[in-house]
Length: 200
Image 1: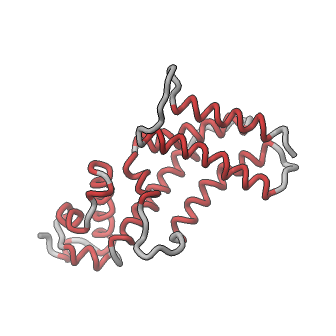
Image 2: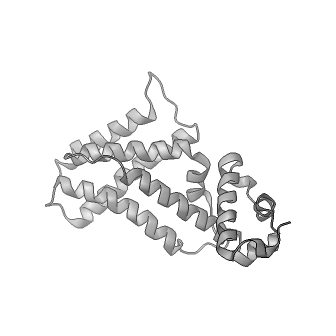
């Protein structure tokens, strides 16, 4: 085992988070444990718990990093003068990220802190940033709509995109006639706008 003095606290934290990400990405959330992380970085389990409060704390920090990466992937998409087209780009980027990082993406929604409680504030803020990005595009299509209407529309639309994504990632999206998740996401967004723009 490496001596504790071999790395600073922050370095151990980064090593542990990266190791956890690698374990989840390769083997899934069910195979993640403090012992596996400790073995991967050459430290003891005790050292892991000197840096993190518990395994839940470590996982939440992994999820924060995943959400940051997801936000960067979506927000970096080329914006169009047409919000509808921009949102199609956002939807495709969201699906592509989940497809390329299925276990890490799923961990955001699969992990439940023992004892329940409210969503971690850090995670809530990152999720809110992603929704703000989407909401801004929906708002741009009709400035006259009430904020509550825009917010509800944002939640409804992205719940649909998320639903298609999670069914596709879990191989439960039964498709025929060459209908792909990408086509379904585009169709969902197009149909959403056809209805949204005709309602008050």
